Amino acid sequence: MRIDCELCSLQGGEVVHVATHWHVVLVDDAGYPGFCRVIWNGHVQEMTDLSLAERNSLMAAVWQVEAAVRDVMQPHKINLASLGNMVPHVHWHVIPRFEDDAQFPAPVWAQAQRATAPEILVQRTDLLPTLRTAIRARLASLI
Image (cartoon, rainbow, N blue to C red):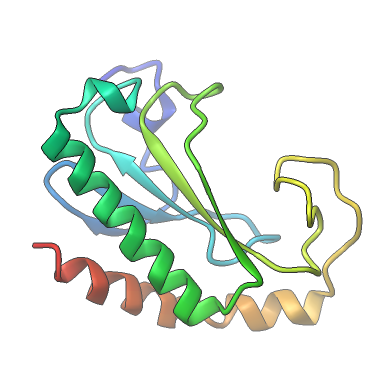
C-alpha cells in the first residue's frame, strides 16, 4: 500500500464486492451511471507484476462485471480500459457507452459533444440497485 496512491488510500467509489486480491466499485459519475472499476487491492503498477493466476483472477472479475453491466444497463457498447497514466495502480474501467452519452463516440475522457437528457440519466441511475445485485451474483460464482 502506498499513501500517495489514491487507489490505495481511497476505495475508488462505492464498494460493491471485495475479493481477496481485488474489489469492484461503482464510480460516482453522474454522466455515466453504471461505470465500474475493478481494482487490484495491493499497490501493483502493471499487469505483468501479477502472477498468471492473479491476472486470470482479475480478468475473470472484469469479464463478470462487463457481463452484468451489459445485462442491466443495455448499453450500445462497453469500453474496457486499463490506463494508469494518472494513477499507476492496476485497475480496469468497465464503462457502459450509449450513443447519446456526452462524449460518444469519443472516449469518456474527451471533450463533451452534447448533454445527455437528464431524464435518460435518471432512468439509467435507477438501474444501479439492479446492477449492484447482478455484479454480486456474477462474482459469487468466482469464489
